[in-house]
Image (cartoon, rainbow, N blue to C red; front, side, top):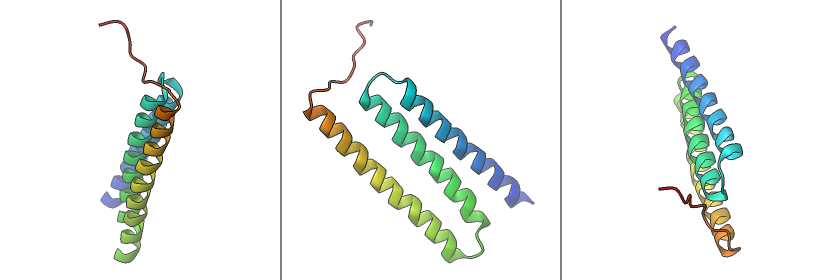
Length: 101
């Protein structure tokens, strides 16, 4: 019963972070802040979902596989975000700076 409640809470938190990342992708002004919002929120959201699924898995091997997938996604998303940001920088896209201080 307690594991089921923990799983529901973790999956809900993961979904909330996915929604927050999507809102950041749609609302932030430049490519760099959009990448930051998307990668951070999606990685944390996937972490919550992976932990929620891992505690419901039938074996330790399955739980390790789920956590392993999360780690691979962490590495892949960081690499992809870096490549996109590097290409944007080389294309001359500068980060937005607000003039108000």
